[in-house]
Image 1 (cartoon, rainbow, N blue to C red):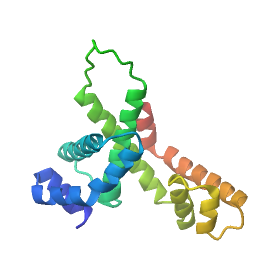
Image 2: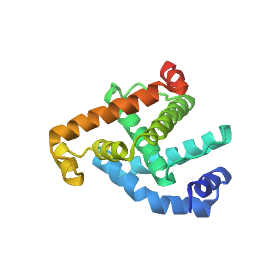
Image 3: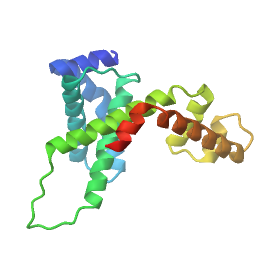
Image 4: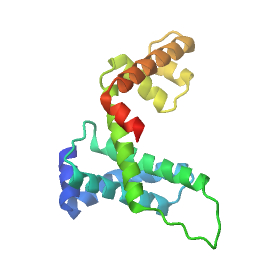
Length: 186
């Protein structure tokens, strides 16, 4: 099934296909969250929130996913979890105070992150195949030595220079887009 089918299922609340989304994607999300200071319950919450936010966004605006649905969902979940970790890092614990998190604010932040991610993915797609390959390895947190084994470059120094040039090109592409200024202003 393609991304359009999954998006339609979320929009129409098709439980059969939504169950397939869970079966296909939850394991990788759970592993990511468990490896990053979370629990199974956290993974379930984040996964549910991600699906809900995508569904809410679909109702607000019609959008398409230009990458795989699985990758898009993983990115949304990863961003939600990182935001949750950052929120907890900055939170002062006081048992007598009950914090209220605005659902609307949380959805707005998620929407903004999705828009930023879409811009990033779109501009990444405009890079050369070589740059895409190098940056995907770099963003997957592989060391320069590991990248060297997966490419035909002669040294780690050459890879560092290539990563720098590709990141610079990607940054220029992103910053030259009018949507970047709008997203940065929010």
